[in-house]
Structures are given as structure tokens and as C-alpha cells.
Image (cartoon, rainbow, N blue to C red; front, top):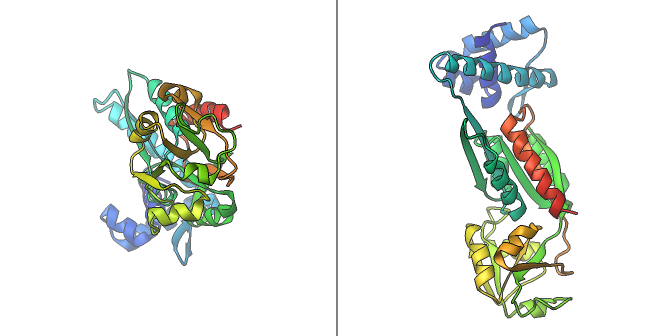
Length: 308
């Protein structure tokens, strides 16, 4: 076994194809196939198997590839260190749903980054299908997938098909958020008719990209309003909710400090009792980095405050 063959195996796993991997490595397909066979013979295991969807790692192969990636990363770090790059750049990337509790955890995570270390941090807010695509295609190392519990079987089968694993973060149902000065702020049992005259803020990035935003919303919720404002970025939602006193929004649990900062209240309602799951996803063979674990720790802390 040598490092070059190890690198070949990692490239094949990423491409799910000998042909594509050979193109990326600028080498002939027969030579790459022979190198993989020699590696398998030296290890005494079968690293890959052919399926109708391409080449995928065997269980033993997946275990080997995890070690291989870590070894290659360490070798790369040593080489950079002794070629004058004494300060290494640590990388972190995650794609998430639009949620205040997640953004709060991310803010805490960023505040704890070591000032003496270089770091590249990528944080993308998007819908569930794009989150799966970004992680599966290796654009982002981690993602948070959100879906209703009744769709659990569909999403778990999709994750398995794409070679991803998932860990439950929390379960919740959407609640109403509005200004403390909203006309309905003091009302206990808010009905659909109560909400109809007011301004509803809606995230315009649908869960299923093929559906128009309004149609997607009607499929997912049993509420409506006469006036709807669709937002593609989350930054404006708090300003509108705070300044437009007759606006409201259905959201996942919001940390108390965010509610206090913008003068908002969070209200339970019988109108939306669908239970949702937020799942942390990554490739099956991916090993969490120290930065990943630092973010997960912060996420767990905030989750424990809001998802009860």
C-alpha cells in the first residue's frame, strides 16, 4: 500500500466512477483500475462494488476510506507546514434551513474561533432538497435537513441512496411570532379568521424546488392571510416583524434573546401542529473535524433551550 494508491481510492469514491476519477487524475482508466486492484490485494479487502448507480464502497471499503482521508489530510498538512505555511487554514461548511436557533448557534460558534488560526467558514441557508444535493455533491461537508415526520421514510431512503447519514437534532412544530404590540398579542386562542386581515411573512424558498412558493405553502399549512410577503433572505424578517406591528410569521422555535432583541413574542397555536424534524447530515464516511464538533456543541446548547 502506498499514499498514491490511497489517493486514487479516495478519488474513485468521490466520483463514484473509475472513468470520471481517471479523467480527474489525468491518467488512463486501465492504470487506475489496476492500481485499485493492487490496493485491494495488499489490504485483503474489497474496497468497491459495482451497482446500477455506479461504483460504491463496500462496508470495509467505507471504513478504509475514512482512515485514508484522514491520513491524506495529515500528510497534506505536514507538507504545507514544511513548505513555509506554518499557519494552516481550517475549513468549515454547512447548509441549513432558515431558523433562528441555528443561526444563534452559528453566531456563538464564530465568536469562539481562535484568533490565532486561519479559517474559512461557509454557511448557507436553503431548502431541504438543495441541502441534500450540496452535501451529496461534496460542496458542503455538513447540512441540516428539515422535513415533516410523516415524510421520514421518504427522506431516509433518499439519504441512503445518496450515501449520507443523519442524526436527529430536534423535533418541533411551528409557532406564531409577532410584535409584542400586534393586535393579537394578548389573544390566547388565535384562529385562522383572526390572522386573515394581517400581513404574513413567508420564506419564499420552498421545500420542494419544483413547486411554486404559494402552492408549497398551501400544501404544508392550514393557515392563510390576505397579505403575504415572500422573503428569499432571512435578514429582513425580524425587521419587518418588529417594525410592522400587524405582521406575523410561522417559525421554528426562537431563542428568548432574539425575541427580546426585536420586541417579539412567540405563541403556540392549534392551527399548525405538524411535527418537523431537523437532522444533521453528512456523507457516511465523513469524520467530523474539530470545527464541526465545536459547532455541533453550540447547536446542542441552543437546541436544549428551545426544543423542549
